[in-house]
Image: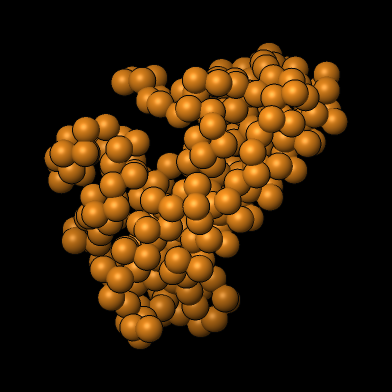
Amino acid sequence: MTELKNDRFLRALMRQPVDRTPVWMMRQAGRYLPEYRATRAKAGDFLSLCKNTPLACEVTLQPLERFPLDAAILFSDILTIPDALGLGLYFETGEGPKFKHTIRSEADVAALPTLKAEVDLDYVMNAVSTIRGALNGSVPLIGFSGSPWTLATYMIEGSSSKDFREAKKLMYGQPEVMHRLLDHLANSVIDYLNGQIRAGAQVVQIFDTWGACSAVGRTRNSRCGTCGKSSTA
């Protein structure tokens, strides 16, 4: 295995002394990097870009060519797991991710297959191993997944949401069904992240995008700490 030339990020995570503390900044490459937009145009669409190993590797490395960063993060999407579970992920221009199928009942949850990440999401594993090789030990590689709750909200709503009405309806009306869905997704996330680690990711991260919107007792005038949108319990 190639020796890691910059381990500042890993040492910081392990609470070891570092000369400078790495800072995480969320970025949306498609909003401003011309090289990213050119690569995405080459792929045809966002999901095709995620599934194209050479291009996903190219996009992952692009920020490192501009800035002296301490880590690279896998180019992918948080909704790969629901897509692999058969919900049919697609993207509408200007509207974000959507699913062809939703999860609204006990029968829907029972029908979900067991994820075998290294088979069902092999394109992600291929991207991880390819990127790790291309980095050649320059910086560590971060893998990631959406959290069970965040994945569940998209699967129930069928898209992003302003009030998470359907997700809260299931959570409060059929809590046992919601727990089964979350358990299923937790096992899927574990398998997915372990697969990324085996493929070469040195760090894994969980994005809980809508976590703050799950709080009990929110009123119409309260604000989600994550998205800043009004939320109704």
